[in-house]
Structure formats: C-alpha cells, structure tokens
Amino acid sequence: MRGGSVSEHRLDLPNVDASLFETPDCARLLAPAQRSTHAPRILMLYGSLRERSYSRLLTREAARMLEALGAEVRTFDPAGLPLPDSVPETDPKVQELRSLAQWAEGMVWTSPERHGAMTGIMKAQIDWIPLSMGAVRPTQGKTLAVMEVSGGSQSFNAVNQMRILGRWMRMVTIPNQSSLPKAFLEFDDAGRMKPSSYYDRVVDVMEELVKFTLLTRDASAYLVDRYSERKESAEQLSRRVNQRAI
Image (cartoon, rainbow, N blue to C red; front, side, top):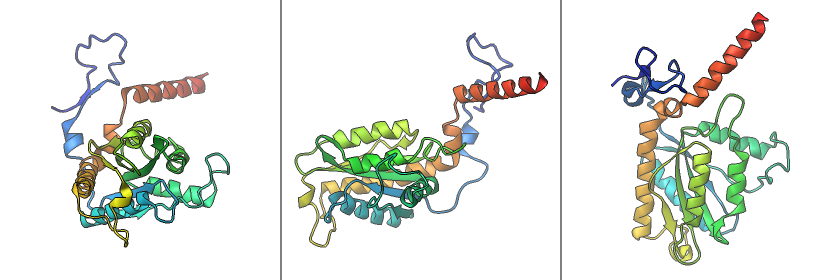
C-alpha cells in the first residue's frame, strides 16, 4: 500500500483536512530513497558522579557491547554540568551535551535509583537537552534504551521514569530494558561486569537498540511526521500569505 493524500477519496471525517490527511507509505518506511551506511551513532548518558559509579561502569560495559555490534559510541561525562537554568545555554558543558544530542541517532540512559527515582544528575542532563533548537528537534525520532542500577532489590522506578521522559522527548524507546539490583556485587575490582543473567540482559538491550536504530534512522523524520503539525504549518503559511496580500 502506498500512502498519500486522500483528498480524491470520500473521507467521512468532517473535522479532518483531507488535503493534509495521509495514509502511511510503506515505501517511505521500508525503502527510503537513500540508506545510511555509516555506523549507528549512540550517545551514552549516566547519572552518578561517584568515584566508583555503578551506572558509569554499566554504561562502559554497554558501550563495549555497542562497539562490538558495529556502533560508534560517545559518552558524556556529567561532571561539571551546571544545574538547568543556572547558567546561559552558551555554557561550554551545555553546548557539549547539546552537540552530542544532535550528533546521536540513538541514546542509552543509565541512572541509579535514589529515593525511588532517577538521580538529579540524570534528570539535569535530560533537562538541558531542549525539545527544539530552532527548527530542529534534537531527540525526535531517535532511539532510546534505558537502564538502571540499584543498591538493593530489583526495581523499575528509574527506568519507568526515563521511559516517560523518552516519550516526552519524542524518542523511540525500545521495548527491552535493564534493571541491575545489588549492583555492587555485579562488578569485579577492575570495574568489569561479571557474567550473569543480568549481563546477558544488557547484551540483549544493546543488540535490540542497534537493530531499532538501523531500522528507523533513515525513516525517523517520516515516522514522527504528524497530521496536526502539517495542519499547523499550512495554517501558518496561509496567515503569512494573507498578511502579504493585505
């Protein structure tokens, strides 16, 4: 089935602008005009500044997996990132984070769970990534994997919160996720993650992230193209044309 305007067909939706209402186009989803050949670009964010940070250790382990899976990986160090709105957005650390967010085609967010929630360090990084930069939404349509580490029993509070944020940032959050309980038991003295079912789950998550990134990155703009935004753009154009005619 090819997509397109349905203005030539009967549309029993009186409140819909038929000229802007489009049926999904399989060709644009599955066979875009040009396929990317570069390695998937993945940005890693973690939510702790401790000297032995288990969220950082887990992030490093996941980065190794991603590189083995063929991805190009960059990790943002949150040390020195100011609190949101405490400095101008021209701050070098803020600009570094925003530049990486634009560069990335997918992200991994890994946070400790503290007081039943993600850490403020994790949230601050997400808050500094704007929903839009000029006409560009730096996260829209990009893939996201979420992971958390806990000091006690297994919990999913932090990953659930990050899923909400991923949706708010208009990201494609993959179904799989990792929650690592008693993280202090899962790493050796060299900071490498020990073999376990938890380790295997992290491999699963990174493999799934790369697959979803390869699947969606060339169609991400089309995936998040919305009727309401096409309508708004049409109305804005109409207003500009009418103003010029006055």
